[in-house]
Figure 1 (cartoon, rainbow, N blue to C red):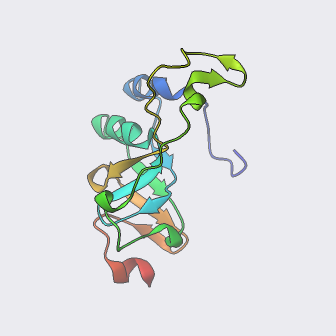
Figure 2: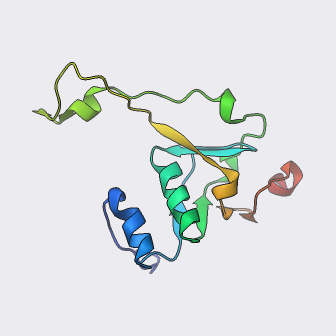
Length: 136
């Protein structure tokens, strides 16, 4: 909004419906790590990439060059599991049984075939990435 880019806030669970209705013209996400084969980012990024691909909507990743890890790959990174109480409670309000099993990963991975381009301070890069292309 500060850069005069039109923004509409929606709940993440309605993203597919909004895309189906033609209300989304592109998706822009961040990245915590970029390897040769995947983008690691907050949980939910993968789902949004699948929805964008299905609806033929460009899916962009904005990240600094320091995010690229050309020695890593999907299987080399351990995904952090967050505290189960993040899902069992909202503040002091209990939302689920205290002993319910919880699966709460902090990150997911998005395959490069779902990425239109990565936008960095050194330019826009399109998968597949070449090390010398990105680091120039």
